[in-house]
Image (cartoon, rainbow, N blue to C red; front, side, top):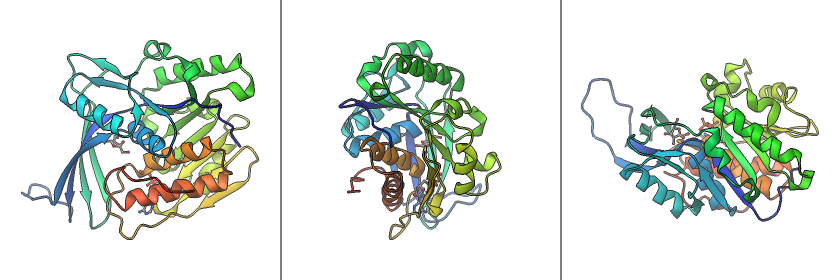
Length: 305
Ligand code: ADP
Ligand code: FRU
C-alpha cells in the first residue's frame, strides 16, 4: 500500500484542451445536414480531466501543461479553477491556438467520437518542469504523450527521490494509453502504471487480467499496475502480485463516456492518496467512473468510498 507524503499536492502533467461536444441521439450519416440535441463547451484533455476529478475527491491538486494565450485558454483555466485545481504553473504560449476537440456524443449508445486538433502548440519541456518546486507535491501523474520530454521529467523526479527517505518520496504514476506515443519509459520507472484497454490490446493482451499480469512482470519492483476495460470494469495488481478485479458500476443510463478513463485514473489516485487497500481503490475507481458515464461532464462526482 502506498503512503503518499503528508499534506502536499497531487500534480497532473499532460494535455488540456477545449472540448466542444455535440450531443446527438443517433450517429450522423456522412454528408447529411443534422441538428443536435445540445452543445457543451468544457475543458478536456486526459490530465486536465483527471486533475478535476482528483480535486473534487478532496486532494489538493495542481495541473501542469501548456496553452495558448486567448479566449479558449481563459475558458478552460476558469473551469479548472472552479474545480479547485491550481493552474498557476500552466505554461502559456503567445502566437498559437490552444488545442481543441470536436466530439460527437451519441446518447443512444453512449459512444464518444473525438476529432482532436493539437494546433501545433508546443508541449511541456524539461526546462518548464525544472521551474516546479517538487517539495510541493506528494504525487505526480504523467500522461503518456510527448514522451521524449516526459521521460526526462520522470527521471528528474526519480533523481529527486533518490536523495530522500521512502516516506518522503514523490509517488509517480503514468498513463499508457496511445501506443503511438511510446509511453514504455513508464514501465520501468513509475510506482503506479495505468494501462488503458487500447494500449493493452496493442500489446496483444485480450483482457484486463492478462494485461495486469503481463505488465506486472515488467514493472519496477513494488509497482502497481491498473487496467480499465470499459463496461467490464477494471483489474489491478499491486506489489504483492495478487490480482484484483472490480466490476463496472452501471448508471441507470449511459449517456456520456467521454473521459471515463481519465475519471477512473483520477479516482484511483485520490483513493490511493487515502491509502485504501487495492481492492477498495479499484471499486472506488469504477464507482466514480460509472457515475460519470451516467451524466454529462465531470461535476458532482464526490461519493463515499
Ligand atoms: P476510456 O475512457 O479510456 O476508454 P474505459 O472505457 O476503459 O476508459 O473506462 C474506464 C472506466 O470507466 C471503466 O473501468 C469503468 O469503470 C467505467 N466505464 C466505462 N464505460 C462504462 C460503461 N459503459 N458503464 C459503466 N462504467 C463504464
Ligand atoms: C478524453 C479526452 C478529451 C480530449 C481527448 C484528447 O479522454 O481527454 O477530453 O478531447 O481525450 O485525446
